[in-house]
Image 1 (tube, rainbow, N blue to C red):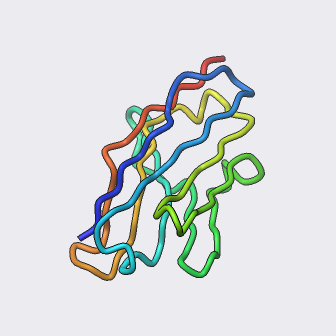
Image 2: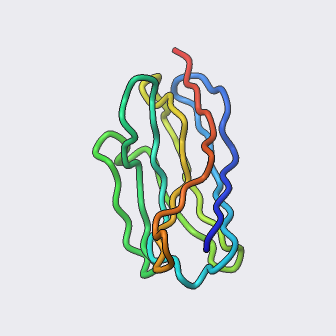
Length: 117
């Protein structure tokens, strides 16, 4: 089993920056992919960024060049640095871990990011 808890959301003006953090606990070695998803009101949850245990990253087209995912293995944590934020980035951001342990997909409760214009 894996537990993930995110932090770092808040209110920021357009063009500003925020950094989200995700702390993992439990069977850390079972995690293969770490990432972030987001869900805006009335929309489906969507991928923002992922990073594999090997260090490969993947980003949604809408955030490429503005967001950066990174990890700190010593702290069992990963991060999402969000720059040049836009109002359309407003959403609840969820930390995500894909594990080899059932039920395989683990989600945090979410942290609100609000970007004002």
